[in-house]
Every structure is written in C-alpha cells, then in structure tokens.
Length: 259
Ligand SMILES: C[S@@+](CC[C@H](N)C(=O)[O-])C[C@H]1O[C@@H](n2cnc3c(N)ncnc32)[C@H](O)[C@@H]1O
Image (cartoon, rainbow, N blue to C red; front, side, top):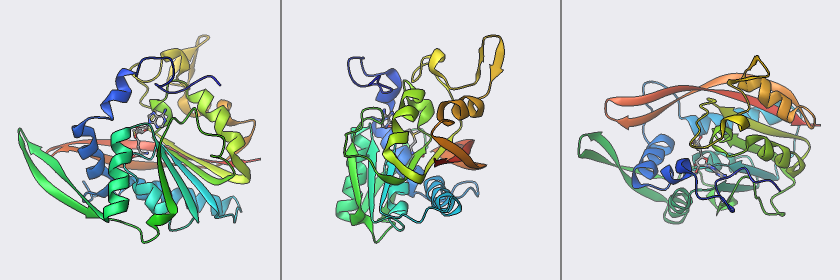
C-alpha cells in the first residue's frame, strides 16, 4: 500500500513531531476537555454528534462498530461510545494515545493551560462517558491500518486529511473498511501545509492544469466512486493557545454514504 503517513521508510515528518510535545498534549487536552471558549461549542463533541446524525440521515441503523481515526486525546471517541457498541480510536501520536488511555484508566486527568509567559493554570477533567470501556485506543497510522480494522458502520476523520502525507491514499483505503450504507464523516479546515503534505498531494487549494481546484472538489473526486455526499456544513472550533490568544477556525463537515 502506498503510505499516507509520516511513518514507514520516510523520516518522521516535521509536522508529526509537533503532536508529541508537552505543549501539544496540554493544548489538545484543553481543546477536548477544557471549558468552552469564545462561545464556540466543544468541537470533538460536535463532530461526534454530527457524524451520528449523518448515519441516521443515511438510514443506516447499524451501531456495532465505529472508527475515530486521528482521535488525538479521545473526546470524540468517548462521545461516540454513547452510540456504538465498540469504538476503535487511533492516532499517530504516542503522547496523545497515552493521555487518552490515562483518562480512560484513571477516570480523570490534569494538565496545565498556559495563561501568559511562563504562567499557567491547572485544569482537571473527568471521563465524559460512562461507556468508556467500549473504546479501544491504539497508536497507529491512518494509512497502514491493521486488517482487522474493518466492517465499520461509521468512520470519523476529524481534521485529519490535511495532516496526512497522502490524503487520497487514506481515502482510497478507508472505503473498503466501511459496510455498505455506512458513513464516512470528515471535517477539515483544509489548512494544507508542506510540513505535513507535499503540495502535489493536496486535495485542493491549488492550481491543477491551469484551473483552481477547491478542497471540497478534490475531496469529492477522491471519494466519489465508493461514496455519495449526503451532507455538508460548517463546524467552528477554537483552540486556546494562551489566556488571550486563540485560533478560531471553521472546519467543513462532509458526510459520505458508502454505496
Ligand atoms: C489536527 S489534529 C485533529 C485531532 C482530533 N481529531 C480533533 O479534531 O481534535 C490531527 C490529528 O491527526 C493525527 N495524525 C496525523 N497523522 C496521522 C496518521 N498518519 N495516522 C493517524 N493519526 C494521524 C495527529 O496526531 C493529530 O492527533
């Protein structure tokens, strides 16, 4: 299989290393479990809710198996466990999976949220779902998934595709892992960066043969064979950097029904 990740024979991509730092772990714990920021609802919870609603709209009643790929520190995985008997939750970052496992095991977690300069506040969160034992967290590569990671009723890939080395390779592989009638839910702000994805692999946001191609257009072309589009909408999110600095972004949510 052609890889889409920073793993394999390639050296670890510059971008992938960013998700292994203390700062990233704290930032994502804050993003997933911290207080609501600037009036924008919790993003991973909103993604899980939108993905479950899309599966209902697709008329797919199966609630056996779900995959949260690029799950980070696990909030959407725990939310999905309210609806699915089994959730596989996979992320490339060892540190993120370690934090999610600690939360599942201990029922709570602490981190420091930077405020200004060298100062921070201590935060704590407890497990957001009583069905946490239904989640299996695994460190792994979205583009080199084990053969048994298959037969999913729903796959959520939230803000993942623009962090992969070859997003089209991931999309080509994931189709066979979803049951007919099942749903692939994708969110992305399409912030393509060379640190993660070589420009010729960007799904859109570039000129191809003299024509401007949008990311939605490129995404549609990549999944159109095995999937049909059933929903498109915006989901905003805020990542808090310090007490006074935030990234306010609008992800595009698309839901695709497996033919
Ligand atoms: C922008 S974050 C989004 C995380 C989470 N879904 C959310 O919405 O908060 C991208 C995530 O994808 C993970 N990731 C990047 N490349 C990956 C790969 N090849 N396989 C699995 N996860 C990957 C990163 O470690 C990171 O947790």
